[in-house]
Length: 159
Image 1 (tube, helix red, strand yellow):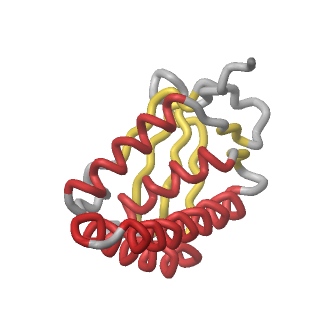
Image 2: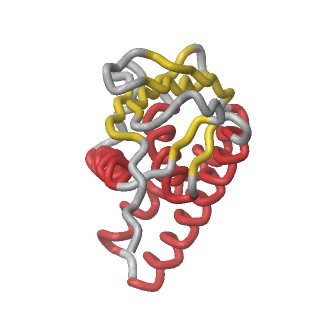
């Protein structure tokens, strides 16, 4: 059995950019970081950049800054992405997440499952958009993309 690659060994979010959305969302953010560090595929297109990497995510003027750093935290390359393609997905994702967190307290299991399926569908859609936006810049696998999308959501509304 092959070991899961871990190209990102440290991830930080700009504290000024983080949207505080309550304990459920904070918990999801922490899980996304933990899972991302446990296994991820993240390879910049520039072959001169070799893992392992530190990754710093922030928002600057409404854009996502993906700052790829070496293990001494020196910046190697930055990619700045417009979040316009993500806005509707993120808005819908937060609305469904809010519904999900309310539903788990009072709804039937089948209602919770239906909301969760919608939540996962939006999450997958956001992950696909992220992979498209990074195409030619950074190669990431689906699971890495999903976890990064969770972190983008944590940054989105403050930046």
